[in-house]
Length: 208
Image 1 (spheres, rainbow, N blue to C red):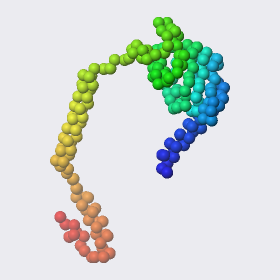
Image 2 (cartoon, one colour):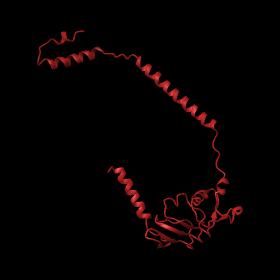
Image 3 (spheres, rainbow, N blue to C red):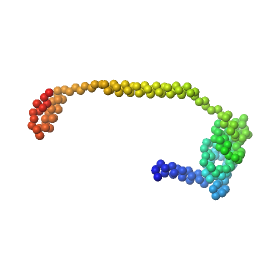
């Protein structure tokens, strides 16, 4: 098995080990069936949802101080069938979108009610809150077109300069100036090396 696959498998094993059947300290858990847990986390003065085991079937979070639910909190909880969020001061702003989308796929009522802002106090968490969120305006298409045009122009200029530099280097002439002293030194070295094998006149050999 490749090392990368082993690493991924080990990570999945750790997630299952950590979130499998371990009950968080803030809650009390009891076995509902051979595969599920009943979690009682009510009246614990919790400000956020604790780590939930993957085998949880029912989760009771009543009468806490939970104002929002972080995205991904209930992801992977395939066995979770019942959730109770009543009595929590939920703030129904744009950050409640994840909870709205998750509750939309559940059959039972979670009892989640808005406490703030004041205009939504007491109303159930619903999908209508998503449309009321003000989202940042996307920049116009002309902004992206102008930016892309500048990038393309810069790229073409860089390519043109590179071609010009290469053509200039191709037609450049290099001159090497060799002095008479350099030739004499080279002749002396050549004569000394070849004198052991051949007896030649170094002066005639190096005559220009």
